[in-house]
Image (cartoon, rainbow, N blue to C red; front, side):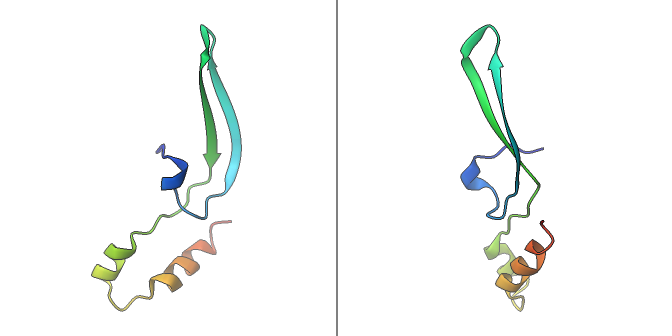
Length: 68
């Protein structure tokens, strides 16, 4: 499972939950983890380069209808 900065994730992410891990030996050492369902992230330039006739907006809309 990949870990990404929030800004690098897909725009249509669905939040499942939030949890925090605290180091029992040092409470200043903690991690806040937001857990999302997997979601596609599109490389628009690559799609246009490989499939010039494809409307990327339509493709994104079609795929995102299955994300919920």
